[in-house]
Length: 501
Image (tube, rainbow, N blue to C red; front, side, top):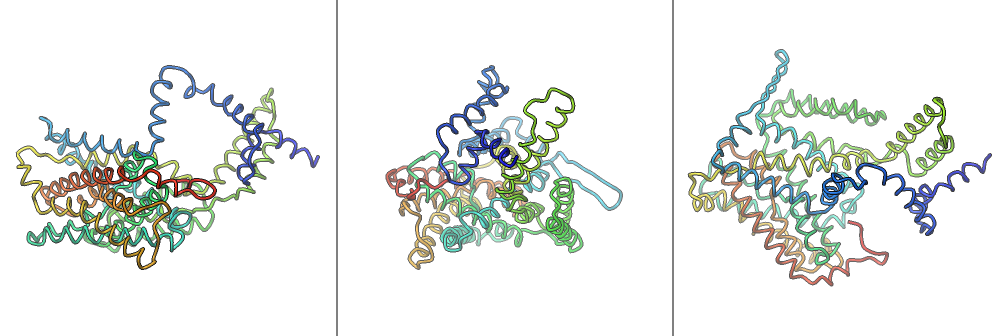
Protein backbone atom coordinates (compact mmCIF):
# COMPACT_ATOMS: atom_id res chain seq x y z
CA UNK A 1 0.00 0.00 0.00
CA UNK A 2 2.80 2.43 0.78
CA UNK A 3 4.25 2.09 -2.71
CA UNK A 4 0.98 2.73 -4.49
CA UNK A 5 1.01 6.55 -4.37
CA UNK A 6 4.49 6.69 -5.83
CA UNK A 7 3.51 4.37 -8.60
CA UNK A 8 0.36 6.30 -9.34
CA UNK A 9 2.14 9.65 -9.38
CA UNK A 10 5.05 8.34 -11.38
CA UNK A 11 2.69 7.10 -14.05
CA UNK A 12 1.39 10.62 -14.64
CA UNK A 13 3.79 12.16 -17.18
CA UNK A 14 2.51 15.71 -16.70
CA UNK A 15 3.05 15.65 -12.92
CA UNK A 16 6.45 14.05 -13.46
CA UNK A 17 7.47 16.78 -15.89
CA UNK A 18 6.32 19.51 -13.48
CA UNK A 19 8.13 17.85 -10.58
CA UNK A 20 11.43 17.43 -12.45
CA UNK A 21 11.36 21.03 -13.70
CA UNK A 22 10.58 22.35 -10.21
CA UNK A 23 13.58 20.61 -8.66
CA UNK A 24 15.93 21.49 -11.49
CA UNK A 25 16.16 17.96 -12.92
CA UNK A 26 16.14 17.91 -16.71
CA UNK A 27 13.05 15.93 -17.78
CA UNK A 28 13.66 12.92 -19.96
CA UNK A 29 12.53 12.98 -23.59
CA UNK A 30 9.87 10.38 -22.75
CA UNK A 31 8.37 12.69 -20.11
CA UNK A 32 8.39 15.70 -22.43
CA UNK A 33 6.82 13.76 -25.29
CA UNK A 34 4.21 12.26 -23.00
CA UNK A 35 3.37 15.58 -21.39
CA UNK A 36 3.04 17.26 -24.76
CA UNK A 37 0.77 14.46 -25.96
CA UNK A 38 -1.46 14.73 -22.92
CA UNK A 39 -1.59 18.54 -23.21
CA UNK A 40 -2.44 18.30 -26.90
CA UNK A 41 -5.19 15.79 -26.20
CA UNK A 42 -6.62 18.09 -23.54
CA UNK A 43 -6.43 21.35 -25.49
CA UNK A 44 -7.06 20.37 -29.10
CA UNK A 45 -10.79 19.58 -28.64
CA UNK A 46 -11.51 22.99 -27.11
CA UNK A 47 -13.24 25.65 -29.17
CA UNK A 48 -10.30 28.08 -28.82
CA UNK A 49 -7.81 25.54 -30.22
CA UNK A 50 -10.10 24.22 -32.92
CA UNK A 51 -9.81 25.01 -36.62
CA UNK A 52 -13.15 26.78 -36.73
CA UNK A 53 -13.22 30.14 -38.49
CA UNK A 54 -13.67 32.45 -35.48
CA UNK A 55 -10.91 31.09 -33.21
CA UNK A 56 -8.50 30.48 -36.12
CA UNK A 57 -8.94 33.89 -37.77
CA UNK A 58 -9.65 36.13 -34.78
CA UNK A 59 -9.24 34.74 -31.27
CA UNK A 60 -5.81 33.09 -31.55
CA UNK A 61 -4.24 36.03 -33.48
CA UNK A 62 -5.61 38.42 -30.82
CA UNK A 63 -4.10 36.27 -28.05
CA UNK A 64 -0.75 36.15 -29.85
CA UNK A 65 -0.83 39.94 -30.25
CA UNK A 66 -1.66 40.41 -26.56
CA UNK A 67 1.37 38.31 -25.62
CA UNK A 68 3.79 40.70 -27.31
CA UNK A 69 5.51 43.33 -25.17
CA UNK A 70 4.54 46.20 -27.45
CA UNK A 71 0.83 45.33 -27.62
CA UNK A 72 -0.36 47.42 -24.66
CA UNK A 73 1.53 50.46 -25.95
CA UNK A 74 -0.04 50.05 -29.39
CA UNK A 75 -3.56 49.86 -27.91
CA UNK A 76 -2.81 52.92 -25.77
CA UNK A 77 -1.59 54.84 -28.84
CA UNK A 78 -4.75 53.91 -30.76
CA UNK A 79 -6.95 55.10 -27.86
CA UNK A 80 -5.09 58.42 -27.63
CA UNK A 81 -5.36 58.94 -31.40
CA UNK A 82 -9.08 58.14 -31.24
CA UNK A 83 -9.53 60.76 -28.50
CA UNK A 84 -7.74 63.41 -30.56
CA UNK A 85 -9.76 62.57 -33.69
CA UNK A 86 -13.02 62.62 -31.71
CA UNK A 87 -12.24 65.96 -30.05
CA UNK A 88 -11.32 67.62 -33.35
CA UNK A 89 -14.02 66.11 -35.56
CA UNK A 90 -16.97 68.23 -36.76
CA UNK A 91 -18.91 66.79 -33.82
CA UNK A 92 -15.97 67.39 -31.46
CA UNK A 93 -18.05 69.23 -28.88
CA UNK A 94 -19.66 65.87 -28.00
CA UNK A 95 -16.33 64.73 -26.54
CA UNK A 96 -16.50 67.09 -23.56
CA UNK A 97 -20.27 66.70 -23.33
CA UNK A 98 -19.93 62.94 -22.99
CA UNK A 99 -16.95 62.67 -20.63
CA UNK A 100 -17.46 65.81 -18.54
CA UNK A 101 -21.18 66.50 -18.94
CA UNK A 102 -22.49 63.01 -18.21
CA UNK A 103 -22.79 62.47 -14.46
CA UNK A 104 -23.51 59.44 -12.28
CA UNK A 105 -25.22 60.22 -8.95
CA UNK A 106 -25.89 57.90 -6.01
CA UNK A 107 -27.51 59.05 -2.79
CA UNK A 108 -28.27 57.08 0.38
CA UNK A 109 -29.92 59.29 2.94
CA UNK A 110 -27.92 62.18 4.33
CA UNK A 111 -24.62 60.35 4.79
CA UNK A 112 -23.79 59.17 1.27
CA UNK A 113 -23.71 61.44 -1.77
CA UNK A 114 -21.77 60.35 -4.84
CA UNK A 115 -21.86 62.61 -7.90
CA UNK A 116 -19.08 62.31 -10.48
CA UNK A 117 -18.74 62.80 -14.22
CA UNK A 118 -17.70 59.89 -16.43
CA UNK A 119 -14.22 61.36 -16.69
CA UNK A 120 -13.96 61.60 -12.90
CA UNK A 121 -15.18 58.00 -12.55
CA UNK A 122 -12.42 56.91 -14.92
CA UNK A 123 -9.76 59.02 -13.19
CA UNK A 124 -10.81 58.28 -9.61
CA UNK A 125 -12.30 54.80 -9.97
CA UNK A 126 -10.83 52.83 -12.85
CA UNK A 127 -7.39 54.36 -12.31
CA UNK A 128 -7.50 53.10 -8.71
CA UNK A 129 -7.37 49.60 -10.22
CA UNK A 130 -4.47 50.69 -12.44
CA UNK A 131 -2.59 52.00 -9.41
CA UNK A 132 -3.47 48.81 -7.51
CA UNK A 133 -1.64 46.88 -10.23
CA UNK A 134 1.22 49.39 -9.96
CA UNK A 135 1.30 48.75 -6.21
CA UNK A 136 1.45 45.00 -6.86
CA UNK A 137 4.36 45.49 -9.28
CA UNK A 138 6.21 47.69 -6.79
CA UNK A 139 5.66 45.15 -3.99
CA UNK A 140 6.88 42.32 -6.23
CA UNK A 141 10.03 44.21 -7.22
CA UNK A 142 10.77 45.26 -3.63
CA UNK A 143 10.30 41.77 -2.20
CA UNK A 144 11.09 39.37 -5.04
CA UNK A 145 12.53 41.34 -7.94
CA UNK A 146 15.34 43.66 -8.95
CA UNK A 147 14.74 46.17 -6.15
CA UNK A 148 15.04 43.65 -3.29
CA UNK A 149 18.84 44.01 -3.30
CA UNK A 150 19.69 47.57 -2.16
CA UNK A 151 22.90 47.64 -4.21
CA UNK A 152 21.15 46.44 -7.35
CA UNK A 153 18.31 48.90 -6.77
CA UNK A 154 20.61 51.84 -6.09
CA UNK A 155 21.51 52.65 -9.71
CA UNK A 156 17.96 52.74 -11.19
CA UNK A 157 16.70 54.53 -8.06
CA UNK A 158 19.34 57.26 -8.39
CA UNK A 159 18.68 57.50 -12.14
CA UNK A 160 14.94 57.85 -11.49
CA UNK A 161 15.65 60.62 -8.96
CA UNK A 162 17.59 62.56 -11.59
CA UNK A 163 14.78 61.90 -14.06
CA UNK A 164 12.33 63.57 -11.66
CA UNK A 165 14.39 66.54 -10.47
CA UNK A 166 15.60 67.87 -13.83
CA UNK A 167 12.20 67.85 -15.62
CA UNK A 168 10.57 69.62 -12.65
CA UNK A 169 13.31 72.28 -12.61
CA UNK A 170 13.06 72.84 -16.37
CA UNK A 171 9.28 73.21 -16.11
CA UNK A 172 9.56 75.74 -13.29
CA UNK A 173 12.14 77.64 -15.32
CA UNK A 174 9.65 78.03 -18.20
CA UNK A 175 6.57 79.02 -16.17
CA UNK A 176 8.12 81.03 -13.33
CA UNK A 177 7.44 84.25 -15.24
CA UNK A 178 3.81 83.25 -15.71
CA UNK A 179 3.22 82.32 -12.09
CA UNK A 180 -0.24 81.57 -10.76
CA UNK A 181 -1.85 78.20 -11.39
CA UNK A 182 0.73 77.30 -14.04
CA UNK A 183 3.29 76.68 -11.28
CA UNK A 184 1.23 73.72 -10.05
CA UNK A 185 2.17 71.63 -13.10
CA UNK A 186 5.78 70.94 -12.08
CA UNK A 187 4.94 67.29 -11.39
CA UNK A 188 3.61 66.60 -14.89
CA UNK A 189 6.95 65.95 -16.70
CA UNK A 190 8.29 63.73 -13.90
CA UNK A 191 6.45 60.55 -14.97
CA UNK A 192 7.54 57.65 -17.20
CA UNK A 193 5.03 55.50 -19.07
CA UNK A 194 6.07 51.86 -18.66
CA UNK A 195 3.81 50.51 -21.42
CA UNK A 196 5.15 52.82 -24.12
CA UNK A 197 8.82 52.71 -23.07
CA UNK A 198 8.92 48.92 -22.78
CA UNK A 199 7.00 48.64 -26.05
CA UNK A 200 9.66 50.65 -27.88
CA UNK A 201 12.40 48.50 -26.35
CA UNK A 202 10.54 45.37 -27.48
CA UNK A 203 10.58 46.63 -31.07
CA UNK A 204 14.40 46.80 -30.96
CA UNK A 205 14.88 43.11 -30.09
CA UNK A 206 18.48 42.06 -29.47
CA UNK A 207 19.91 45.56 -29.90
CA UNK A 208 19.00 46.24 -26.27
CA UNK A 209 20.75 43.89 -23.82
CA UNK A 210 18.73 42.08 -21.18
CA UNK A 211 20.45 44.02 -18.40
CA UNK A 212 19.46 47.32 -20.01
CA UNK A 213 15.83 46.21 -20.23
CA UNK A 214 15.85 45.32 -16.54
CA UNK A 215 17.45 48.69 -15.78
CA UNK A 216 14.62 50.50 -17.61
CA UNK A 217 11.96 48.44 -15.82
CA UNK A 218 13.51 49.11 -12.41
CA UNK A 219 13.89 52.81 -13.26
CA UNK A 220 10.23 53.00 -14.28
CA UNK A 221 9.13 51.28 -11.04
CA UNK A 222 11.22 53.72 -8.98
CA UNK A 223 9.74 56.54 -11.06
CA UNK A 224 6.24 55.27 -10.20
CA UNK A 225 7.12 55.36 -6.50
CA UNK A 226 8.23 58.98 -6.89
CA UNK A 227 5.11 59.94 -8.87
CA UNK A 228 2.83 58.33 -6.27
CA UNK A 229 4.65 60.21 -3.50
CA UNK A 230 4.24 63.50 -5.37
CA UNK A 231 0.51 62.87 -5.90
CA UNK A 232 0.00 61.98 -2.23
CA UNK A 233 1.84 65.02 -0.85
CA UNK A 234 1.38 67.83 -3.35
CA UNK A 235 -1.86 67.08 -5.20
CA UNK A 236 -4.24 66.61 -2.30
CA UNK A 237 -7.38 68.75 -2.02
CA UNK A 238 -8.83 70.14 1.21
CA UNK A 239 -8.17 67.39 3.75
CA UNK A 240 -10.99 65.92 5.86
CA UNK A 241 -9.50 64.12 8.84
CA UNK A 242 -12.76 62.29 9.60
CA UNK A 243 -12.93 60.64 6.16
CA UNK A 244 -9.16 60.05 6.17
CA UNK A 245 -9.49 58.33 9.54
CA UNK A 246 -12.19 56.09 8.06
CA UNK A 247 -9.89 55.17 5.16
CA UNK A 248 -7.04 54.36 7.53
CA UNK A 249 -9.43 52.26 9.62
CA UNK A 250 -10.35 50.31 6.48
CA UNK A 251 -6.68 49.58 5.82
CA UNK A 252 -6.26 48.46 9.44
CA UNK A 253 -9.24 46.08 9.07
CA UNK A 254 -7.70 44.61 5.90
CA UNK A 255 -4.32 44.14 7.60
CA UNK A 256 -5.97 42.48 10.63
CA UNK A 257 -7.95 40.15 8.37
CA UNK A 258 -4.78 39.25 6.49
CA UNK A 259 -3.00 38.38 9.73
CA UNK A 260 -6.04 36.38 10.89
CA UNK A 261 -5.75 34.22 7.80
CA UNK A 262 -8.87 35.37 5.95
CA UNK A 263 -8.29 34.53 2.29
CA UNK A 264 -11.62 35.10 0.53
CA UNK A 265 -12.01 38.03 -1.82
CA UNK A 266 -15.68 38.16 -0.77
CA UNK A 267 -14.43 39.89 2.40
CA UNK A 268 -11.67 42.04 0.93
CA UNK A 269 -13.42 43.54 -2.13
CA UNK A 270 -16.26 45.31 -0.22
CA UNK A 271 -13.83 46.60 2.43
CA UNK A 272 -11.51 47.85 -0.32
CA UNK A 273 -14.38 49.67 -2.07
CA UNK A 274 -15.43 51.33 1.21
CA UNK A 275 -11.80 52.32 1.89
CA UNK A 276 -11.55 53.81 -1.62
CA UNK A 277 -14.73 55.84 -1.08
CA UNK A 278 -13.54 57.15 2.31
CA UNK A 279 -10.26 58.24 0.73
CA UNK A 280 -12.15 59.88 -2.15
CA UNK A 281 -14.16 61.94 0.34
CA UNK A 282 -11.10 62.79 2.45
CA UNK A 283 -9.47 64.97 -0.22
CA UNK A 284 -6.52 62.62 -0.72
CA UNK A 285 -6.65 61.26 -4.25
CA UNK A 286 -8.61 58.02 -4.22
CA UNK A 287 -6.17 56.17 -6.50
CA UNK A 288 -3.73 56.02 -3.58
CA UNK A 289 -6.07 53.49 -1.98
CA UNK A 290 -5.15 51.17 -4.85
CA UNK A 291 -1.44 51.69 -4.22
CA UNK A 292 -1.81 51.04 -0.48
CA UNK A 293 -3.84 47.86 -1.05
CA UNK A 294 -1.32 46.64 -3.63
CA UNK A 295 1.57 47.13 -1.19
CA UNK A 296 -0.38 45.22 1.49
CA UNK A 297 -0.99 42.17 -0.73
CA UNK A 298 0.84 39.03 0.51
CA UNK A 299 3.72 37.76 -1.60
CA UNK A 300 3.72 34.24 -0.14
CA UNK A 301 1.17 31.50 -0.87
CA UNK A 302 -0.62 29.52 1.83
CA UNK A 303 0.96 26.26 0.67
CA UNK A 304 4.62 25.83 -0.22
CA UNK A 305 5.65 23.90 -3.33
CA UNK A 306 6.26 20.75 -1.26
CA UNK A 307 2.89 21.09 0.46
CA UNK A 308 1.18 21.54 -2.89
CA UNK A 309 3.00 18.48 -4.23
CA UNK A 310 1.91 16.33 -1.28
CA UNK A 311 -1.69 17.54 -1.18
CA UNK A 312 -2.14 17.23 -4.95
CA UNK A 313 -0.77 13.69 -4.91
CA UNK A 314 -3.09 12.64 -2.10
CA UNK A 315 -6.09 14.02 -4.00
CA UNK A 316 -5.05 12.39 -7.28
CA UNK A 317 -4.48 9.06 -5.54
CA UNK A 318 -8.19 8.95 -4.66
CA UNK A 319 -9.35 10.35 -7.99
CA UNK A 320 -11.54 7.80 -9.83
CA UNK A 321 -10.18 6.79 -13.21
CA UNK A 322 -13.70 6.24 -14.53
CA UNK A 323 -16.94 7.67 -13.24
CA UNK A 324 -19.78 5.42 -14.39
CA UNK A 325 -22.23 6.00 -11.54
CA UNK A 326 -23.79 9.11 -10.08
CA UNK A 327 -21.90 8.58 -6.82
CA UNK A 328 -18.60 8.27 -8.69
CA UNK A 329 -19.29 11.46 -10.68
CA UNK A 330 -20.05 13.35 -7.47
CA UNK A 331 -16.78 12.04 -6.06
CA UNK A 332 -14.93 13.25 -9.17
CA UNK A 333 -16.48 16.71 -8.80
CA UNK A 334 -15.52 16.85 -5.13
CA UNK A 335 -11.91 15.82 -5.73
CA UNK A 336 -11.60 18.25 -8.65
CA UNK A 337 -12.85 21.12 -6.46
CA UNK A 338 -10.38 20.10 -3.74
CA UNK A 339 -7.51 20.09 -6.24
CA UNK A 340 -8.63 23.49 -7.56
CA UNK A 341 -8.69 24.94 -4.04
CA UNK A 342 -5.22 23.58 -3.26
CA UNK A 343 -3.82 24.93 -6.55
CA UNK A 344 -5.48 28.31 -5.90
CA UNK A 345 -3.87 28.68 -2.46
CA UNK A 346 -0.49 27.49 -3.76
CA UNK A 347 -0.16 30.72 -5.76
CA UNK A 348 0.72 33.88 -3.87
CA UNK A 349 -2.16 36.40 -3.77
CA UNK A 350 0.12 39.03 -5.32
CA UNK A 351 0.98 36.83 -8.28
CA UNK A 352 -2.61 35.66 -8.66
CA UNK A 353 -4.08 39.17 -8.63
CA UNK A 354 -1.40 40.61 -10.90
CA UNK A 355 -1.95 37.83 -13.43
CA UNK A 356 -5.71 38.38 -13.31
CA UNK A 357 -5.77 42.19 -13.40
CA UNK A 358 -2.78 43.12 -15.57
CA UNK A 359 -4.53 42.38 -18.91
CA UNK A 360 -7.58 44.40 -17.80
CA UNK A 361 -5.34 47.26 -16.70
CA UNK A 362 -3.23 47.26 -19.87
CA UNK A 363 -5.89 46.61 -22.50
CA UNK A 364 -9.01 48.19 -20.99
CA UNK A 365 -8.46 50.63 -18.11
CA UNK A 366 -5.45 52.56 -19.44
CA UNK A 367 -6.86 52.87 -23.00
CA UNK A 368 -10.21 54.09 -21.55
CA UNK A 369 -8.27 56.60 -19.47
CA UNK A 370 -6.45 57.80 -22.59
CA UNK A 371 -9.74 58.04 -24.49
CA UNK A 372 -11.27 60.10 -21.66
CA UNK A 373 -8.29 62.44 -21.14
CA UNK A 374 -6.23 62.75 -24.33
CA UNK A 375 -8.82 64.65 -26.35
CA UNK A 376 -7.40 68.13 -26.86
CA UNK A 377 -9.57 70.31 -29.10
CA UNK A 378 -7.53 72.55 -31.42
CA UNK A 379 -10.46 74.18 -33.21
CA UNK A 380 -10.06 77.95 -33.06
CA UNK A 381 -6.66 77.60 -31.35
CA UNK A 382 -3.45 79.06 -32.78
CA UNK A 383 -1.22 75.96 -32.89
CA UNK A 384 1.97 78.01 -32.70
CA UNK A 385 0.72 79.76 -29.59
CA UNK A 386 -0.41 76.45 -28.10
CA UNK A 387 2.94 74.75 -28.69
CA UNK A 388 4.98 77.74 -27.51
CA UNK A 389 2.91 78.33 -24.39
CA UNK A 390 5.15 78.20 -21.27
CA UNK A 391 3.24 75.22 -19.84
CA UNK A 392 3.51 73.25 -23.10
CA UNK A 393 7.22 74.09 -23.46
CA UNK A 394 7.92 73.30 -19.82
CA UNK A 395 6.26 69.90 -20.04
CA UNK A 396 7.58 68.97 -23.50
CA UNK A 397 11.20 70.05 -22.95
CA UNK A 398 11.07 68.74 -19.39
CA UNK A 399 10.20 65.27 -20.71
CA UNK A 400 12.68 65.37 -23.60
CA UNK A 401 15.70 67.23 -22.22
CA UNK A 402 15.09 66.92 -18.48
CA UNK A 403 14.66 63.16 -18.52
CA UNK A 404 17.62 62.58 -20.84
CA UNK A 405 20.05 64.73 -18.85
CA UNK A 406 18.65 63.80 -15.44
CA UNK A 407 18.75 60.04 -15.94
CA UNK A 408 22.08 60.05 -17.81
CA UNK A 409 23.85 62.45 -15.44
CA UNK A 410 22.68 60.79 -12.23
CA UNK A 411 23.57 57.36 -13.66
CA UNK A 412 27.04 58.61 -14.57
CA UNK A 413 27.58 60.10 -11.11
CA UNK A 414 26.30 56.95 -9.38
CA UNK A 415 28.69 54.77 -11.40
CA UNK A 416 31.66 57.06 -10.75
CA UNK A 417 30.89 57.12 -7.01
CA UNK A 418 30.61 53.32 -7.04
CA UNK A 419 27.00 53.49 -5.84
CA UNK A 420 26.14 51.05 -8.59
CA UNK A 421 27.43 49.71 -11.89
CA UNK A 422 25.98 49.42 -15.36
CA UNK A 423 24.29 46.10 -16.13
CA UNK A 424 26.37 43.60 -18.05
CA UNK A 425 26.48 44.39 -21.76
CA UNK A 426 25.05 47.89 -21.28
CA UNK A 427 27.00 50.78 -22.79
CA UNK A 428 26.60 54.51 -22.30
CA UNK A 429 24.86 54.69 -25.65
CA UNK A 430 22.24 52.33 -24.22
CA UNK A 431 21.92 54.58 -21.17
CA UNK A 432 21.33 57.65 -23.35
CA UNK A 433 18.72 55.81 -25.39
CA UNK A 434 16.95 54.50 -22.29
CA UNK A 435 17.06 57.99 -20.73
CA UNK A 436 15.29 59.32 -23.82
CA UNK A 437 12.66 56.55 -23.59
CA UNK A 438 12.10 57.54 -19.96
CA UNK A 439 10.82 60.82 -21.39
CA UNK A 440 7.72 59.01 -22.69
CA UNK A 441 5.48 60.23 -19.91
CA UNK A 442 2.03 59.57 -21.24
CA UNK A 443 -0.40 57.89 -18.82
CA UNK A 444 0.76 59.15 -15.41
CA UNK A 445 1.69 62.55 -16.91
CA UNK A 446 -1.87 62.99 -18.21
CA UNK A 447 -3.14 61.86 -14.83
CA UNK A 448 -1.06 64.43 -12.91
CA UNK A 449 -2.07 67.13 -15.41
CA UNK A 450 -5.73 66.42 -14.60
CA UNK A 451 -4.93 66.97 -10.91
CA UNK A 452 -2.65 70.00 -11.27
CA UNK A 453 -4.88 72.45 -13.11
CA UNK A 454 -8.42 73.72 -12.70
CA UNK A 455 -8.16 75.87 -15.84
CA UNK A 456 -9.06 73.68 -18.89
CA UNK A 457 -6.77 75.81 -21.09
CA UNK A 458 -3.73 75.04 -18.93
CA UNK A 459 -4.68 71.36 -18.87
CA UNK A 460 -4.83 71.32 -22.68
CA UNK A 461 -1.46 73.07 -22.96
CA UNK A 462 0.06 70.50 -20.61
CA UNK A 463 -1.42 67.70 -22.73
CA UNK A 464 0.05 69.32 -25.85
CA UNK A 465 3.48 69.30 -24.20
CA UNK A 466 2.99 65.67 -23.15
CA UNK A 467 2.15 64.60 -26.70
CA UNK A 468 5.07 66.43 -28.32
CA UNK A 469 7.62 65.59 -25.62
CA UNK A 470 6.64 61.92 -25.42
CA UNK A 471 6.58 61.45 -29.20
CA UNK A 472 9.96 63.15 -29.69
CA UNK A 473 11.52 61.24 -26.79
CA UNK A 474 10.25 57.93 -28.16
CA UNK A 475 11.50 58.56 -31.69
CA UNK A 476 14.94 59.79 -30.57
CA UNK A 477 15.28 56.97 -28.02
CA UNK A 478 14.45 54.42 -30.72
CA UNK A 479 16.97 56.01 -33.11
CA UNK A 480 19.78 56.02 -30.52
CA UNK A 481 19.17 52.43 -29.45
CA UNK A 482 18.76 51.31 -33.07
CA UNK A 483 22.30 52.54 -33.78
CA UNK A 484 23.73 50.51 -30.89
CA UNK A 485 25.53 47.26 -31.60
CA UNK A 486 23.37 44.13 -31.28
CA UNK A 487 26.50 42.19 -30.32
CA UNK A 488 26.58 44.01 -27.00
CA UNK A 489 23.42 42.24 -25.93
CA UNK A 490 25.17 38.89 -25.91
CA UNK A 491 27.27 40.09 -23.01
CA UNK A 492 24.11 40.25 -20.94
CA UNK A 493 23.98 36.46 -20.82
CA UNK A 494 24.91 34.73 -17.63
CA UNK A 495 26.85 31.51 -17.59
CA UNK A 496 23.57 29.61 -17.30
CA UNK A 497 21.90 31.43 -20.15
CA UNK A 498 19.85 34.57 -20.61
CA UNK A 499 18.16 36.31 -17.75
CA UNK A 500 14.39 35.86 -17.77
CA UNK A 501 12.75 39.24 -18.27
